[in-house]
Length: 113
Length: 111
Image (cartoon, rainbow over all chains, first blue to last red; front, top):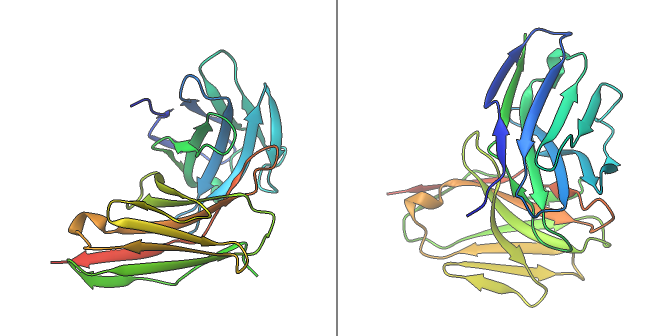
């Protein structure tokens, strides 16, 4: 069964550094997402991406965040200057179309020191 | 009011028990509904979509009541492997299609 893959599985970064989280969505999917989950809290939406542009973003997704689909397969989330509170699990998801459910990658654990 | 609200957990049940989870959502414009399960520190995995007529998948039955903005999940004949956190998830099907997650209800099935 096709799956969403994410790398790295764990990223440790000093506060203030830039970090790029990578995702390869399911190949024929059209909609792409990033979510995060702070330890002990619920999963929160960050951003959705369709047709090479952001369709929606949350309040969390401020100027420090950006997304890119540089080629036909990768979907990246960049945090320009990380803060301690960016420590969380970051999940990428993709969806085919319509009311189809989203499928999640196994996440990147981001630890900011 | 939270956008998606679930029963507080944890639920501790013996193997073979029937357990029911409830969920309410605040936005009447919501269009799609799902139950996901999440194992400790892992990704959410789709358990089932929830349809207006109700739907069943083996031991799992989901119900939706749009008038009451209420969703339920029933698990019959619980197995040890059902132990996980169950996430009630709503999608407004707006242009972006973002998912709104509940806090989750933890289930622990004991031998």
